[in-house]
Length: 116
Image (cartoon, rainbow, N blue to C red; front, side, top):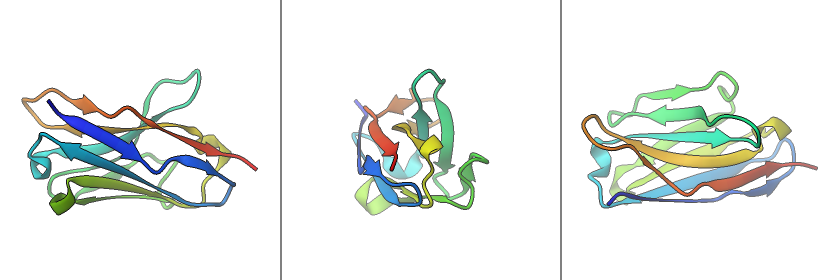
């Protein structure tokens, strides 16, 4: 069974930075499209960024230029570097692993709070 474990969330002031990590196990990580999603209270879960097995990236308009997704296949880990954080980035951030023909997997989530 796929396991995704996120880490790196926390409380940060506006304008600050955080780096989220998601380590995967029980999958051939290099074959999966990985993504970060977030859900704020009262809102639906939304896409933040994705990275394909080939390294192509996609970002939500709201985070373009501020967030960077990357992956290290040797460590089975995907990262989300978040800079210039805003209060509206406050949410629970979830890691996702997706591969055609296989069930999509989600991590347990990590809280990011941007507040002064």
